[in-house]
Image 1 (cartoon, rainbow, N blue to C red):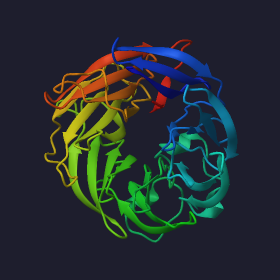
Image 2 (cartoon, rainbow, N blue to C red; image 1 turned 90 degrees about the vertical axis):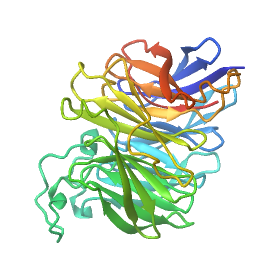
Image 3 (tube, helix red, strand yellow; image 1 turned 60 degrees about the vertical axis):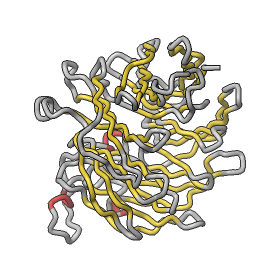
Length: 388
């Protein structure tokens, strides 16, 4: 009772790390390491949590699948080659969806949960340009040196480097969303039963240089929550049949630090009861400025009740190149106080190599640090997935 596990990737080490979080002792410890195949892994799991999918930004570009037993034995299933270095990966039980840099891909899922054949591949530059564009991890966020081409639009955003896709998520209505840092846009697709993707629209961000990084679809499919890496805003979109309608915008950092330091926002996640939305932000190349986690209230309809955060948590460190955050899916069975913590989430740091566990108490609208682990061997945690 009270012991839960999460598997983390690393920014600087090819291993995967199995951690144990004890809600009674309020400790986070290293359980074991799993030899991996690359750096900068994002990890996620299927709904049953018996298969784990991972990306890496090492060379050559690859994605992976792993099996997991109930006692957390992690075994490699297979590895798939991809065209570009992918950042994030998700699945819907039938297909995996991954994206990064100049491309995105849909793969079938094999019977054993492994990554199967390519079903669809999309590119965010003309296909003839694929051989010459940067397909490494640098292409994910670079917005320098525009390609010398024109796509027939007068919008100046067409002249940024035309790569920088970051994630690929599909909602309950089979609408797929790829946030693209370089285009300042969200690509919206219709995902067919056979896994093919039909482009429905390209939805530009409210401002140039917003840099949409990650999205989170609402449970009913009516809303899309978007975190902008470069501008530190949370955007709320209403999801239509073919496009997105921008509805709300909220700052995910305090007003007093906006413009004082440079930040990079990372994650957007929901509480278990879908009443609170959390965001994470790291400072950029400045160890004097710490990272932030913000909490916003959601109405029963799914939009923000107020565009001001109800809570802001200042991290102990800048969070470096990480700032990963994901809410645990389980209820804390050891917490008998109904007014106490109702959600736990991890927060990752690469400045000094820490993984933090934060607790959210909606009755007092507070975020607090519950536990922390300093990684060994100069490893730097990137993203993680809760296993149990």
